[in-house]
Image (cartoon, rainbow, N blue to C red):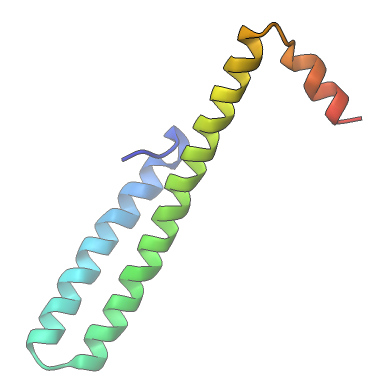
Length: 87
C-alpha cells in the first residue's frame, strides 16, 4: 500500500475492515436484509475515505520531497528557506 511508513498499520487495519464490511454487506444483500447491507456499505465507504486520505497524504509527502530535491539540485539551501518562512 502506498502510504507513509507511520500510517502502514492503520492502512492495513482500514483495508482489513473494508474487506470484512464488503463481505458482510454481500451476505446481508443475498439474505434480503437490505438495510443491513446498506449499513455495511456505509462503513466500507468510511474506511475507503480514510484510506484515501492516507494515500493522499503520502502523495503530498512525495511531491514535497521532489520539490526539496529539485531545490537542492539548483543549489538552494532549504534550511534558509524554511527559516525565512517561519519568521
